[in-house]
Image (cartoon, rainbow, N blue to C red):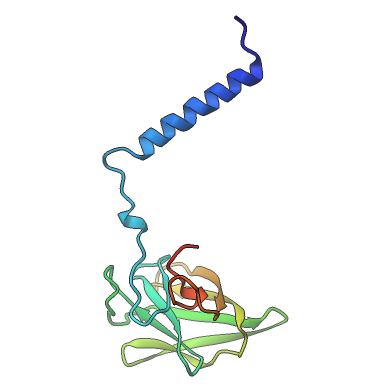
Length: 156
């Protein structure tokens, strides 16, 4: 019996998928590292730097950065530097952050835009490289987890 080339390829692909799935679901496999870190104020948790931090838009439209540990508890601000670019794409606005009461707050309120592109530039230490975090500040409420969309944790 002769098997066509396309059938051979399909069989090899199927066997590969089964093998990868078996290795992926092995005994030391865990999704614990993928679980969401709780945010103290209901904002977006940013994990591209250590320590992680929460980006939260307060009701006065001032952005607040709260550094957190792995359990979501607030920790003091260190030597971190953060800047933000937001607003409309045709007229972006830059904001610096200043330290107040153990958190960083933007030097002014963000524009009244419901779904605003945000770019954060983060320097975790004076001798570290800048890291960027990009997202949309979507202020609509998520129907599943009750957070605003920019901070949604339900993964829809």
